[in-house]
Image 1 (cartoon, rainbow over the protein chains, first blue to last red):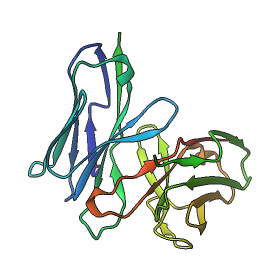
Image 2 (image 1 turned 90 degrees about the vertical axis):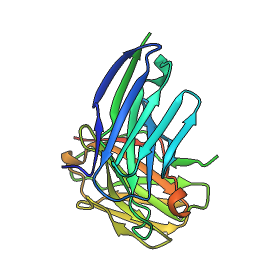
Image 3 (image 1 turned 90 degrees about the horizontal axis):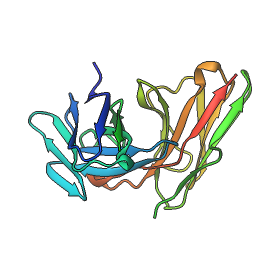
Length: 111
Length: 114
């Protein structure tokens, strides 16, 4: 069993739909990251969470530390949101700078 | 803005060749990382470095080596390329700022070994 599991692996939506991508992890963490990878390969960091909720534009990320679960929500989805979304966790301070990654969720938003 | 550049976007090599992948960052970051990304497996850490001339093995170091002679540059070396090393290779860098630390990624190099 992977330390970080995402669901679904693939997601197709129509423009305007509300989208949720889930991430569960099995280890203690100090932080969780949501990353976005567009076709062509480049990866950008969307959020870093250690508790609660963060919002940036149409994107919302939440984390429940007790349940070891995080969600990434996209409101009013748009075709330009089509990308791979990756969840990554960092262990407790002192475990270094290493991240453990989920396999990613391929999101396709159709017009 | 942090910029992480990789020497090639696409590379085609033959089995047995020695392959060099270069990564340069312009933000004076102490930490640098090399990953490979394969369908169904996600990103896996090959090697990382916390300082010049320092290296640590990641989860899949076999068949690879690294070099960090200058702070801004981290090179990944495939000593004798094999077909199972065909993959997307991503470099990243970060400053060690505790739990706020964020990794910045390069654009990736798609390597095909024939």
